[in-house]
Amino acid sequence: MKRVKAVFPIFLILLILSLFILFFFQNSLTAALQTITLPIQQWVFMASVKPTGTLTPQQQLQQENNQLRAQLAQMQEIKKDDQALHDQFQTTSPAPQKLLPADVIGFQQNSLLIDKGAVEALHDGDVVVFKNNLVGKITKVTPHISQVTLLSDSSTSFTAQTAKTSANGIVRALDGGTIVLANVVLSDKLEKNDIIVTKGDLDLRGNGYPPKLIVGKIVSIDKQASSLFQAAKVESLVDVSQLRMVFVISQ
Amino acid sequence: MVFFFLFLLIVSIFLEGTVTILPLVLICLFILTIFMRNLFLFILAFVAGMLLDVFALRQVGQTSIFLLLIVFLLLLYQRKYEINSYPFVLISSFVGSLVFLLLFGYGNVIVLAVLSSVIGVVLFGIRRFFVAK
Image 1: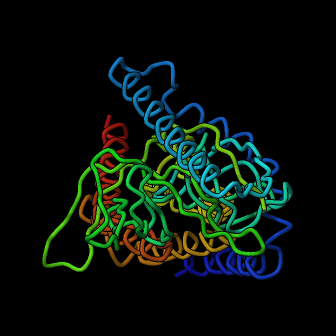
Image 2: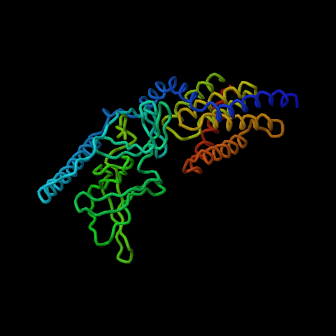
C-alpha cells in the first residue's frame, strides 16, 4: 500500500504535465523537439534502409524497365499533346510549379515522413512526386516534418486515365493497400502494362493532383460482362520503401 | 542487464519513429517495469512517449499518457498478480499492444499485437536466462 501511495503522486504529476503539453504547448514543443531529433531520425532511417547500390541484377533490370515504361508514357503524352496542337493550334501550358526537394526520414504503414514542414511553407494537400511518378499527398504538417499519405492508403481517390487507350477511371486503394483503377466503363479499353496517369483535378487555388503524373502500370484487369464497370489492379513504378528523396509540388 | 534494456528502449524509440509500426517501446517498457518496479519508469514512459509523438507526428503528449497509464497499472497490480511470469508477459503485452495499435489507428492490429507479444516473451526470456546465470 505504501508503494502505491509513493507511486501515485509521481504518476499524477507526469500525467498532468502530459495533459498540459497536449493542450497548451503543442506547437512550440513540437518545433523545439523536432529541431533536436530530426538529424537523429534522418540518420536512423538512412542506416536502416537498404542502399540503392546493393540492388540485384534482376532489381536493376526491373528499375530500368520501369524507367523505360515511364519514358514511354511520357512519349505517348507528348504525342497526344502534339496531335492536339496540330488539331486545334493551341495548347494549355500548365501553371508553373515549384518543386521542393525533401529527404525521407521515416516510413510507416501507408505513409512517409519527410524533413520539410510548415517552416518551408508546405501545406496540407501538397502533392509529392518522384521524377514524374506520383508518390502521395501531404496530410499532416508540423514545423519541421510532414506526413505524406501514399497511394496505397484507403483514403486515396482521384480521377485518372490510361496513357495508351485514354480510359477514364478513379484510382482507389483497397484495405490491403492494393491500388486499383475502378469505375471504368465497359466500353473503354484497358490493357495490361498500360500506364495510368492522373487526369488532373486542380481547383482554382491549385489544390489537387496536377495532370499527367504517373500513378503506375496495369498488372491485371477485372472485366465482367454482368458488371456496370471494369477495374484494373495497378502497380506503382516506384518502390516507395527505397525512396530517400522526394519532391513536393508546393502550391 | 537493466542498462541493456534501457539501451534497447532508446533504440526502439528511434526504430518505432522511423521504420517500424510495431509498439517496441511499449514492450521494452513492459519488461523494464516487470524487473525494475520503481518510480524512474514513469520518467522513462513520459520521455519515450514525448519522443515517439514527435517522430510519428502525433499530438505531443498522448503517447506519454498511454505509457504512463500502462506503467501505473502494472505497478498497481504487481501485488495482486504475479507479473514476473511468462503468461502475464504474453497476455499483457498482447492486450497492451492491441489497445495501443487500435487507439493510434494502425491497421493489421491482431498480427502486430501477436508479433509484439512474441517479442515481449523473447525479451523476457533473455532477461530471465541471464539473471538465472
